[in-house]
View 1 (tube, helix red, strand yellow):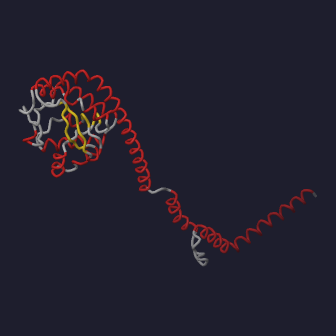
View 2 (cartoon, rainbow, N blue to C red):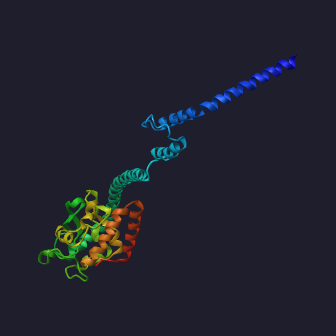
View 3 (tube, rainbow, N blue to C red):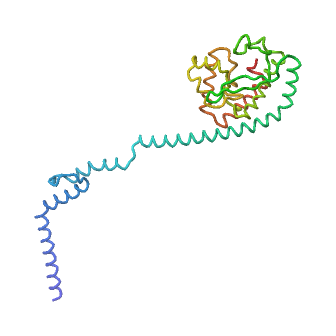
Length: 290
């Protein structure tokens, strides 16, 4: 009896399954269309309610790239973001180095004045004993952003040397230079008073050399980008001074402008240290002085 009852229950279950399968096959076209529309509508809500013939596979194939594009940032956007961040970092580093450079300039100038004081006193006595005129020579120069300031140097030329010639560059074996002045120039001792210009914030230890207003006026017309060298404080020494000779022609100035602009672009602590080290070599060898 138990076996017969179990067999009857199994037959009823099989019959129920067959009935459900038959109903599914009868309703299968309608169910498929409605499922396809449901998926399509939620992927694209603007589709017409009559568009039940759209296949799910096709919709998925077309929609997938669109979803990927909506989530992935464009390469151009990444470039703009990264370049903007790089610009902010570069400006911050530049401003930080400029502040550090000003502080280090002041400290180095103070130390330089203390160390060089005996040399200045001795040089002043020699100048006074061998030629008439003031010991300190003052001259107008163009500095940061075109500001005019008075530069200080030990006098190496005869008094009123430019009264007849006007503003001109010193020449090889220039007759206007005194015997003592020639030694001072050869050793670059005549540049030491410019440390006071550094203390006043008019100059830096390292930077493009300042030029006279009348010469700047003429060179701006002859040399492209000449004014860009006025973006930073002029220096006692610079990249152009340690790698190129004194100015004699316009071509010399053009070459030095390239050095000045390169320094402005790459200025940093290591560059300044290398220029200072090279300056010591120039001072010891007397290269470039006349």
